[in-house]
Length: 481
Image (cartoon, rainbow, N blue to C red):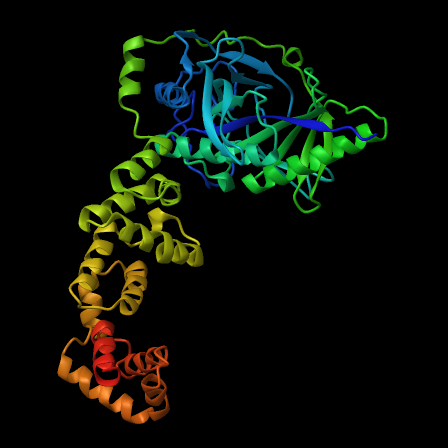
């Protein structure tokens, strides 16, 4: 008899904070510098050095906690997490253990069954380790080099409750969490640069059982898609292990994207393995309530609230509002467009259609585009005035996207102004009628759809510049009386 299992997933997300300097020294956090050039005696842990907390790190951690509905600790401290690894120059990491800065939060996600709240256990601050560059894949490397530039870069670790029941829910959680951090501007969440990293704890248990099964920790997943795929694989692996009568071993496993499988790395450490103790070189932090209130009052509108406002204030369908609030920059582009042109749905259609398509083709972010909401609004005004047709507008839009030029300038430079002179259009309409007697006979015998063919011929003759409404009306007047 086959056993039906329930999946239990919890995520640990490390987000690099968007400070200019490191957490305990003034070395730069800039990405991409030559190896081992953004280092100093403090972040290298040389004897006789002392760390000094970057206040901005604490501020950003509190802001993240507030946005994720956490309680902010009035008293918090740093601890030493001891472990030995080549990318950790001090042989310990300054982190937080029993008194983290934020606890007991939550975030809401959309699932196939509707909205679901995922608990957040804690958010704590810590320093990043260095980066090992392996010669070959991580499990078969013949050697490794280490770059300490990342050592001491400030992180927050956001630890979820084990509330997710499918890999899809885990991906939805990560997507929503990334949005919140980006809206706060406390992290750029760039996974390619390591600004957002995720470890997953996954176990399975028979449906109805209260006790958790033995978990595996998954590491080295560099995209949301990889997280989902790794979880899917691991769930099936654990089912196979239990199905043949064996026990799941508690361990850390790495995800190999090329093999599409998880591979065992080492036995999973417990908290006591790290021999935590209070960091003696840093005093505990007493967080002022008034400061927390100031930070709370200064929080920007977050994605869920903005999405709801777009529906109520602008009358947009929920789907439009969800797409437009996917990033802060996209939402700002939309609102700038609505300010310039008072038709929210019209602005939304162009952004969700042509704009997102061109962004995908060019593989760029919203911030890198040369198009502004003001330019989009001006183009839509030209359409309303009859200066350009909807077809010509697509040409103008593409040029605006590529160059950032004013739509009126583009229309003038490329000679795209719509022909609305009735006598000129009538002359071309007469020409098309005389050249297409079969289509004319079809229309006169009741086949009204044939008029679309003639409209197309007129538009072809005018290179799409004839006023389509005028063309339609003239053809009907001449052929359908």
